[in-house]
Image (cartoon, rainbow, N blue to C red; front, side, top):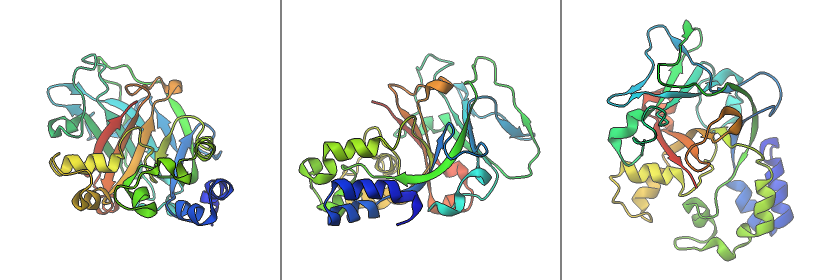
Length: 285
């Protein structure tokens, strides 16, 4: 047991039979939680404000719809990069943009099943040492209030309905509703460890609805693949969470009905800093 999973491991062994607690804990993955005051120290990320873009980089635009809104920046050097299980850059800055409906009152939606809409979300990587300038927000957009966040290495867990959880505990068709990992007291204890918005880099996504890795995989396979097929599972396991940006009242961010934005990427593309290959999806209640 390491420090990043100590709290959830202790909760599991308090509420679950030892063998089940061990299996559940083995599914945990480290993530960098981004929160107000989490971990102390220097700011690792910022919601809202204006982005620092390289001089030769234009503000991202969804052709036919308009400029995207700036959502967040992440300083890779301020993250616990070496302790995560994804190959993040050791330094440089990640900038996240999303067409949030300000320009058309929410008429055009960025939907993972609609490839024509994928330009409505973007990740830009700015290598360390690049000369940048604070880019003013394009006309028609109101920037989100700036909120600084610090990073803390912590554990991320899988939903009981996630296919990997089901495969671990019971195989295809397994129903977790009567299983100890769905116990209400256990669920509440785990939930209390995530007080506040769920902003994170790496780890398991905290999906609002279906597992987002499977949602992305399903779209990439054409939308007709069975949700229970081995092909879908194989594709889904290629995708890693890069970033999750939650609804956050401090930054006046509300994604649908208290939803979250997700950027996912394949391991090889992340290792090669091919952030143009990241795929976006979002979910809300």
